[in-house]
Image (cartoon, rainbow, N blue to C red; front, side):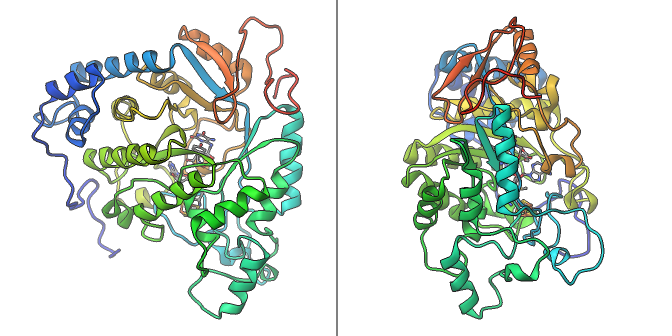
Length: 445
Ligand SMILES: C[S@@+](CC[C@H](N)C(=O)[O-])C[C@H]1O[C@@H](n2cnc3c(N)ncnc32)[C@H](O)[C@@H]1O
Ligand SMILES: Nc1c(NC[C@H](O)[C@H](O)[C@H](O)CO)[nH]c(=O)[nH]c1=O
Ligand SMILES: N[C@@H](Cc1ccc(O)cc1)C(=O)O
Ligand code: SF4
């Protein structure tokens, strides 16, 4: 990247939101439940490429079609999971320009003197944190982390990295750091306590867990599954179009490798989710190309339980600091992202409304635009908070019950894979989770 700051929105991309479809035809196909083309999706998400900006009357028609589709596919239940976020480390040198979660890994070395705000947890610390949350009733631990140079898949991987002598593998021995994160398999084993569901290892982390080896992604996910991994978060997806990745995360794996990793996770029998992180430098065509790649992946795997649109939080990020974006998505763009995800992804049952990104009232609005899942209790949140997000770090079962009944829908506690469900009685005297291995209905908070 040169020093010259490109104007916000002024990127010269090869892919442009132009189509030979009309908004009316695309809407008719969506209403009829026909599979949408990329051109259809672009027409719907832009409310027509024939006019500039978002047309509010057309927008309402798209949202209505998506809400109706949601009702046909999943009915009136709104689900949430009792879960805990446990991020293991913020050390990461990948340098994604939308991310303020990371801290430069040099700062974590024992020979580094100055203070820094990052953290690394040992496997035993992770185990204690998960075990405490399990006592409080969680069903799932969701764990995503920076790519700490000392993290390797397992002992065999450490031996390979130590022996390689290559300087380009983003590896340093754990002994050089203040805190030893252990290996990925040790962290998973540690978090796999008392029957909790372990949701961890994004494609980017899986890439880190095989660097410098000739292991396939199947091999890596197979060993992680053996260690207790239950399902894989489909983050690191960002926008699955390489001309966008080159701008916002040039150090990350490409789109094809992300898809390869996800397919491998599915091949060894792990469930997955998929995400899109939108509202930065990309255009409408990129958003819809992303949806097409996710839909094709789901046709091949049938492993994606939910799709999670993550609206870019801009305040404290390099993209914003450097003037590469003027802000994030508008509420109208958020609504259309959710609605077109519901209409385009005809093979993914659940669309998540993330309260971390949209807040409570924004999140409830998304539940009327095609979304049917309202995320989880999480208990701790670092990624959005560090990027400048202000919607807090947890929601209780009682808050979920209040919010969901306020919009006339039915609150349902779910398992990660949506197989187990419990309708929550909003009038009960005490409201707590019941699906977790140690849950007994006592409030989480
Ligand atoms: C912070 S990373 C942690 C896991 C791992 N390092 C990786 O990249 O997969 C997880 C995800 O957080 C999301 N994220 C990071 N910064 C964000 C921001 N400012 N706004 C919205 N989402 C963000 C991105 O989608 C990213 O893939
Ligand atoms: N489990 C989910 C989360 N967890 C919070 C994330 O870890 C993260 O801090 C944030 O989303 C960064 O992009 N967030 C979701 O949006 N959806 C989940 O299901
Ligand atoms: N892992 C994502 C959020 C997320 C987690 C799990 C999911 O299944 C979906 C989204 C993050 O940290 O940003
Ligand atoms: S998004 Fe993930 S890989 Fe990228 S800098 Fe942040 S923590 Fe590192």
